[in-house]
Image: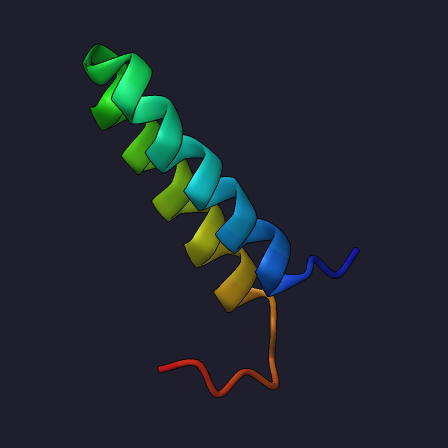
Length: 50
């Protein structure tokens, strides 16, 4: 299954806005979003992201 990079960016925006309402979960949210980004990048063999 190939995921769209834009979907992960939308997910990150949602997490960033969620932080405003619940700062205690910031570290968990950042970890999840970073793991998802790494997962998508590592599974996209034709990426020119970095």
